[in-house]
Amino acid sequence: MENWSVLAGWLALHLSIGLAGTWLARRYALRRNLMDQPGERRSHAQATPRGGGVSIVVSMLLAMVLLAAYAPGFAISLTLAGSGLALVAGIGWIDDHRPLPASLRLVVHAVAAALLALSVLDAGGGVPGAVGAFIAAMVLVNVWNFMDGIDSLAASQALLVALGCVLFTAPGALAWFAMALAAATAGFLPFNLPRARIFLGDVGSGALGFGMAVLVVGAWLPVGQAQNPWLLLLPLTAFLIDASLTLGRRMLRRERWWEPHVQHAYQVCSRRIGRHGPVAIAYGGWTLAMVTLMLTARSFNAPVTIGMIVASWLAGGAIWLRSQDHRPPPHR
Image (cartoon, rainbow, N blue to C red; front, side, top):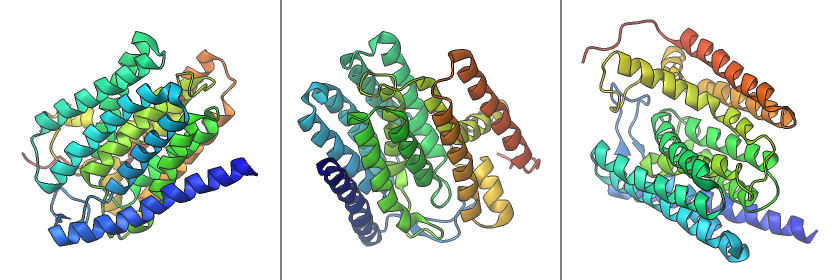
């Protein structure tokens, strides 16, 4: 009963931070006129406050501080990872106030990714694990930023991945961090459901991507003790497929791929049907299916696991192709 009361208190704490923090962030954004304006490269039709994801950042950082206090063996690793998270969130917070060059943001993201790599080294992940952590952070921070373009999509996907991680990994620091992330995101979502009253902003989308990297990398470490940790890539496929295929096509077309656009599958679909909610639900349905597959396949051998991941990419790629307008890209 004591463990259940601790769990309930933990969830209530981070849910409250998500709710109250987002409400305060919205008031701040309105007062400072931090607004995302509609435009041809946007998927919303009215000016909307941004920066609400700062509440999730506060929750994740607090969770790392508390876990470091109660699990001192992970204190150095958590401090390094938390410093990387703070850097990603900090550069996003500044960018939400006044746009920064993409090159500067990329440099800061690289430093944050290096800190996560050092965290993995300290936790016993070795050089291969550190390299994987660096790549995961760089990829997922930017993927979550690219995919944060319609109401509730990026936050709901992060929530589902975090819940999947809780069920997939061993009880311990990683699972508690995942629960904090999920609870805070659940507190943010009521403000972000269509029509959104506030957006994550770069502070939130980048931080969620970094949080996803922490979960994926942690599953490989003793703190996660995940069986067949490659499977944790499955819940990420909805975002990874859409982001990578769209980015690859833009590169092949020699477009300015780092600039905002509306060519992702989720943007095409929301434009086609005129609403954001059904698209977010469809992506959520895919991710729930992938979480179920991940949990079912934990005891499968490596060849079968790799085959399942490849099959999910092929199926997702086919859906991505079918979703496209097949209209010529805008002239640049």
